[in-house]
Image (cartoon, rainbow, N blue to C red; front, side, top):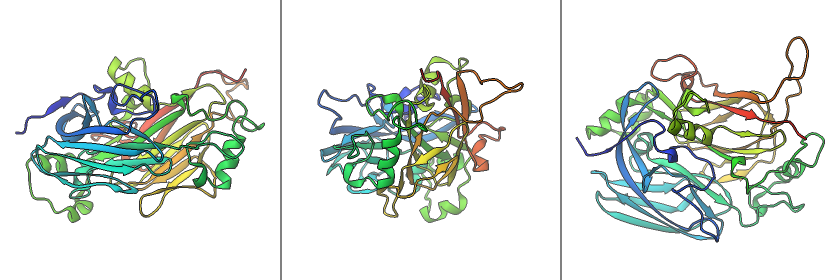
Length: 377
């Protein structure tokens, strides 16, 4: 058996992700970093039901699968050390230049590239695709725009040249109209920018990888049978903030769960690193889909924006959604009176199998909450 780390669920707070600075990826005084050093290591990881499953993770120091942030136009260097006993690779979907074909065991390779326009990306191991990605080798890569405002001055997470008229209209409306009272989106308030990175685990596949069996990557799609479903590497009850959770799990849950006052719009960077198509469904508010993913994996801004309460997320697709934090128009109880704050609403996946984990009942898979803590002044 290979020597590997043991990680309890939520033990490494870096397993969940927002765009808030942490020891894993703190910004410099000048802005986002442009040099990263990742290590590929096998781990024993605890699932929601206590089962220990073999996985392989990217680490930066002690932080597993850290979210990485870069600035548009900057020259980025990513150094990857392979501490596993088999070759691995590195790629960022949608950025062809950010690719390392193969890294032999105990060796290091570096890729240098220019960060393209602002958007949400997934870094992963493309070798023997999709096998290495499915056993845990993936993470979020976010590029912040150099000029991320509309012509009217409203902040957005998208580069000026990539914005559509519809995206500009929405971000100009936030905090400036009767419908969207409150604040504009604030790129400096890191609670207003969340990453929801979805994935699935098939323990039988992972066990075969651990045993170094020869697996035909083309056969995986027909035989993949996921038993666990993760959002930022955690599941179910552990993915939302509950007082009953221990400190480490609660810290991870806080990084997933959107929380804010009425009128504080939040970006949900929804990414699917797995093999199943998910359909996220949110209660309490509609969301607005502002970006999607081209066939080549590059992001683009939407030119037709709808109010949605569910949205599809196929494999390797990323969609940036705006959660407006509106007080629901039909918020009522019986006998009729104003529903009290805080208002808490669920988000879960409408792909039925992903609501369960380890054979358990809903909600043990991809599910979390969002909460409005206070009304507008």
